[in-house]
Picture 1: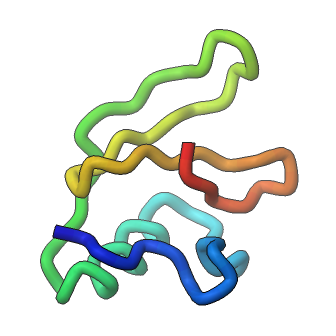
Picture 2 (picture 1 turned 120 degrees about the horizontal axis):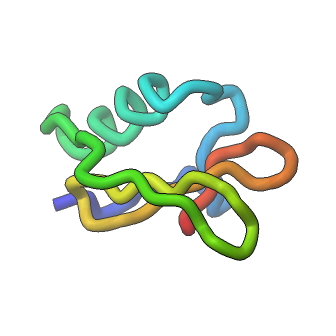
Picture 3 (picture 1 turned 90 degrees about the horizontal axis):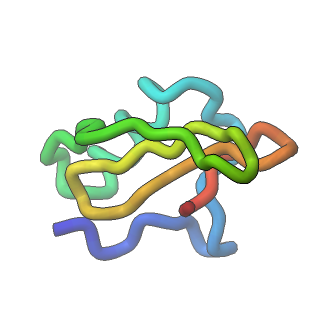
Amino acid sequence: MLLNYNDAAGKIPSGLITIEELLIHLSKLNNSIMVYVKEIYTNTISGSKIYKMSNGISYTKNKNKEWVIA
């Protein structure tokens, strides 16, 4: 189980651009156990894509195109 999914500042590193890079980052934090996308859906209010991961946490990109926990 993923225990620490954010860096020390409480944010996902801003250099991550693609979903693939996010998956690699999350897998490294998860003791190298692969994290994968379980479901993708669209927020009906904001229109942003939300990615539900196998670690039980959902992620989306904010208006600055940074990955954040949804």
